[in-house]
Amino acid sequence: MNTLDALLAGIVTDPLEEARWLVLADWLEENDDPRRAEMLRLHRRLIATCCEPEAHPERAVWQARLTELLIVGVRPCVPQHTLELPGEVPLVGAFVPPGSFLMGGTVRPGEEPVHAVALTRGFFMGIYPVTQAQWRAVMGTEPSRFKGPSRPVEAVSWDDCQEFCAKLTESQEGRGMVRLPTEAEWEYACRAGTTTHYHFGDVLNTDLANYNGAETWNGSPKGTKSEETTEVGSFPANGWGLCDMHGNVGEWCADAYGPYSTDEKIDKQNKSSVNSRVLRGGSWGTYPLHCRAANRGWNAPAIRSTGHLGFRVCFRLD
Image (cartoon, rainbow, N blue to C red; front, side):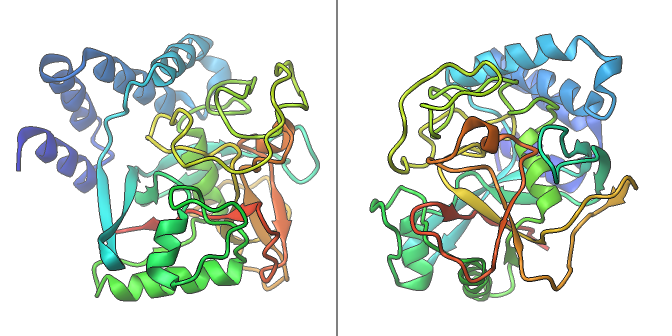
């Protein structure tokens, strides 16, 4: 194990020890791209202050610089783990450490109230939505409308996703359980320490995500109307190295859909038996309003909605 791998492994073991992140930033500055060190320090500041954004007006400057680095292609340095799917098809997950954030929004019904959520355990999340190549490796089928091995799988129901996760977990032979993210995990991972409408800021454009750019919202410039999915990773990542959290395909979450409460939640998940499941992120056909980090959608767990509905997975190694 080289020095960088050792530093990253230490973070997974003890993610709440801030000194480990700062040592990693120092190492990157001396031995890698100094911009990755700058990015990591900025990201840690955003995460540390995300539950009290009004007390830290400097966050806007930090986020703008972080976004600038991401757009020009600087790669976040975070722990990753690769699951090997049947046929030696890889599925890469980025480590999202435990922490707290403000969940919800004030734009549309169903997003309110904004409330604090604490996640007590870290997890790996797929850096991309599950692709058609990954789906085929596990399930042996090709359900998608827009074909391409590196495009996200779509036209899959929540029930289909549960079957995929169960089969992939079985193939790992006890090395971890693969599952859909909870709604809280999804929003926490999408925001990556930000409190703006998108992890890039409050305005979206078609250089940053695949959505219906012919429609505008909140100052977003009018762009091209998307007609299909794009290959995963075609747009910049967020601070945890997760791509396509806004647009491309809507992503199923584990939760049933239901109203929020004002209480602080710990490891929040809605396990109600109601016949609806949460969808997040928007898709290639949705307006920028519906691609926001706080936006909530839902559908029945058996619905496949050709072309629009996909998912990404989470897993832990214990």
